Length: 212
Image (cartoon, rainbow, N blue to C red; front, side):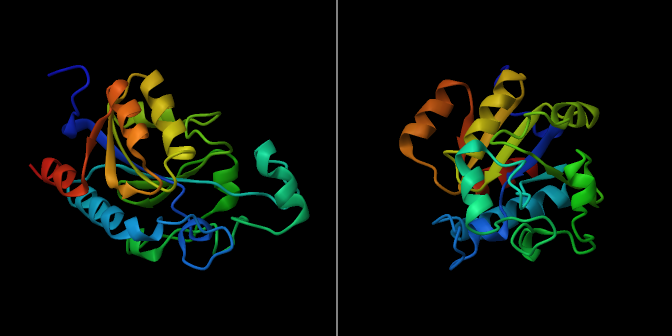
């Protein structure tokens, strides 16, 4: 097997920032095109659950005082309006993407860096900046799950998904991007990811590989 080839027997699905404040139509902080990829993410997660593949929902939240917010957004959060506030509906993610028995998000645990179990092979985690690996235990957690391949999907490729993919590449994970299950993707970004060894595929193709 090529060093870059996906190892579907040791993979995990990483869902980045697919939270209501960012994806729901009409939200003041809606990121255009995000809600449209919900069906593909749902299909990917349903397949992963059937095949007992780990799923990590990577989430952000902004404290009202702005203390955990990127500098470029801190003043906006402090002066204007709350967004993705802990325990708010906006910081949650769509019911369609949750396991049927998932408990409410435990933001106290998440903000302390814990991994909250949502299903038999499904967890939520919090990240404080663009990248899912920045000051988190994500790499350690994935290694403990015997994962060497990551399948990325979620919200707004230019920012958090893109950063997280590059961080994963730096840690020698094999990488796939579900191109129709991520918002904000553009042709130059596809070319750049291909250049660092990321496999680009659609959801149907990935689900077919997972089910083999």
